[in-house]
Length: 402
Ligand SMILES: Cc1ncc(COP(=O)(O)O)c(C=O)c1O
Image 1 (cartoon, rainbow, N blue to C red):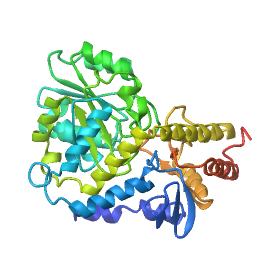
Image 2: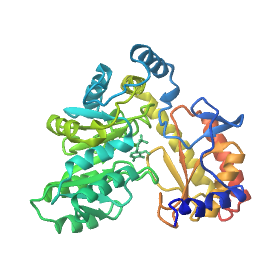
Image 3: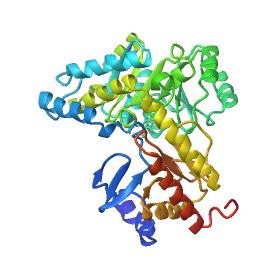
Image 4: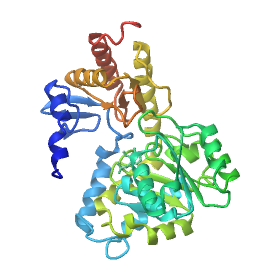
């Protein structure tokens, strides 16, 4: 057997392409945020995590440009040694203050951030207790921890199922260190983690709590401060993780916690120590976006206005929309072929959405994931609803309701 035999045998992409349904890696040639261009074709973008639309705010762009002028395009070294800039420290202070924690540390991507927390924190004889629909970057972190410490350290509980969480955690040794980790807002279905129950269980069974607030920051909580703030549980949430690639208009991630925990992670996390630090332009963009969110919280209200408009419109058409209160609006379709077919019709009519299939969502829950931005206009949203109606009717998805 040759190592590359598996690559030659992997023909699924060609098969899907032969039906004209391949939905991935379509390049955007120009973007204005809520409107993008693909092959010169104008599309309404409802598949982005750019919730507040700040990637195209002139102040954010200028901050990134100014940072390149001042610091250059890359840092060429890790934070630990030559790669720390004053703007990294400024961003960390601003993030810690924003989410209400003593300290924060930043990583080059959100993906690395979850590994960056889990790997140094979980040691042999300790446990990571993870919702089974947590993001892939949390799973990646737990896999590394398992490889280092043994399979028994990972305990998974059914998605948002507090009875299962309590059953599983109560079976673990009380005195052992434990970390319960959950997505604050789940990226594919928009569910919010039941943090009050999680915190209560954590305190009862000697566990710490970490939320991945990638989709919660700038979206829920007081002024967009995320899941812990949404529930009034900032002090009881031990570690808050966030990314810059969603509301913060950049790329990178952070952890916020007590000063001692952050100090430990900064000196023990391979994901920070052995990785070149984030370019100054990314840090400057995130810092400016954070300032704007605090100065102009009305952008969050506009986001929720848009989310409600799209959600109501799709529900009224008869689509099976997962209930929620975030800008993630998932439309359940239920199988791969119909999901890709609807995606393609929407695409051809100028609406960009995300088709989500297993393993990103459970089998039978294949869906079209829509997400809105604060910078969509009512006309954009109404256009999207109209196209869903047209595509849904053509595919006979709405026959029961229309
Ligand atoms: C819940 C969650 N956590 C972490 C990440 C990783 O963040 P990034 O894409 O910014 O590296 C993502 C991004 O898709 C996410 O949805």
